[in-house]
Length: 331
Image (cartoon, rainbow, N blue to C red; front, side, top):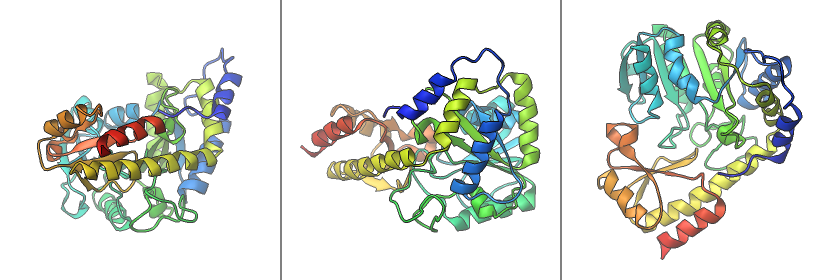
């Protein structure tokens, strides 16, 4: 992975003398940094609350339990931890397609845009349909937006002025101030190259945040004070995020051409950190084929039965590593 920006490292080091217990809700400075970022970058309006998390994976794994959800829906091609979280909660669970008008009733629904693993962007019309589903059924919607800041290309003010088809956007922006039963998850792991720091953010309905906060307080799920300081620095700067996003845009273009040269068809992959592709063969055959070129990819079956003819190619290797891989694939 790419290095953590120096100014974020400096903020962590400066806060390293931290003998006291940090606040579960986050320091006042961190809470203000998250709120400002939510409004100015995500476009959140209306009444909302915020909460820091220990990365986002632990939230995905624990949310169904913390919400005491008895039934969970998640995407049919998806990050495996949505299912794991439902299993840990002892909840009924079902994988569903992107059309909320045909979803069964459930207490908790996961959506993910841009998608891991497919890189698919949910259009605004789909996000509106998800909100309508929540209004009709009372379901909590948890929108995993960890890759929101990595579009396939940049337009003017792309962070806020998301278009219907090309720019990912937060479901809270689409909600336009009515944040009832809506939660979003964000991670600094990729946005700011802080995977080793374990810093994440939950934003949304104040009533839901209050319930999550109470559980987290007693469970000891607290972000360390030095990491909170690093998060403040990271959330206060968008320049480093755009630099990282441009790296992924360039890597995607290079790897797409190389994969197509080998006969792969690219599906979705409009945004995020991954390319979702297939040669029409079993995923494990594609894994073996690319491994013989020194390229390690993830079999699509890890993300559900519908992925058994696809592989996920990550763009998180360094630029020299990507260039070396492309050269081998184009030879």
